[in-house]
Length: 232
Image 1 (cartoon, helix red, strand yellow):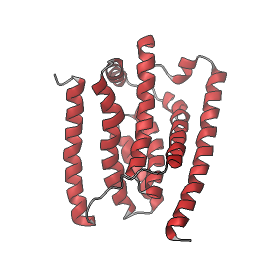
Image 2: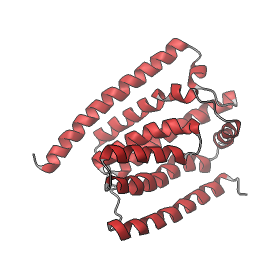
Image 3: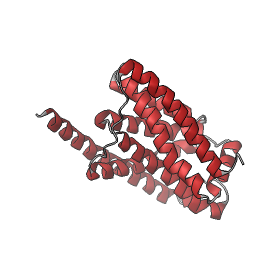
Image 4: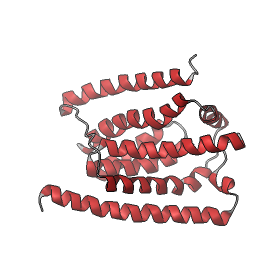
């Protein structure tokens, strides 16, 4: 029963609810009422955020491949992604982004930003996000995306934006898993899956271009938005 996907989902949400409740009470006593900004950014910003996230997701792939995945971690992924169950998908793609962003960006990063310089707060929050995953194989993508999510939160204070980034990243991983595991029945690196080094390099080049272009445009739009907010 404990291994059933619905039980896992309910346990996951319940655990985070308790942790977030305790953290919010402590934060409210020391820093004032906790009121996360759940207003969505503009559609253009969300589109740029999505493109940047996709680019980063594939760019870290070669680094992830440098660290062999432990057998027990691979087995966990196979059991989770290999089971075509809606509850497992909801846990990974919806519950995890919402719960983890409320805690790690809405509470942890928000608190760090009040006591440290932005760059230091963002790096530390990304480091905590990587450590939270409890294995080096996931630390690299979690840290990279944690830097991006931290920067987006710092510039927009929009928790919905970071939830969206987390949703895209987890959704990509889950989608690839559901599509490929029925064919391979094992965790196959992207490079091996493509089967052609030239095509793999083209994928990385496209991901780099997508991430850079989207990030530059995103940065410029956020600067303009900040100037307008200040009335300059």
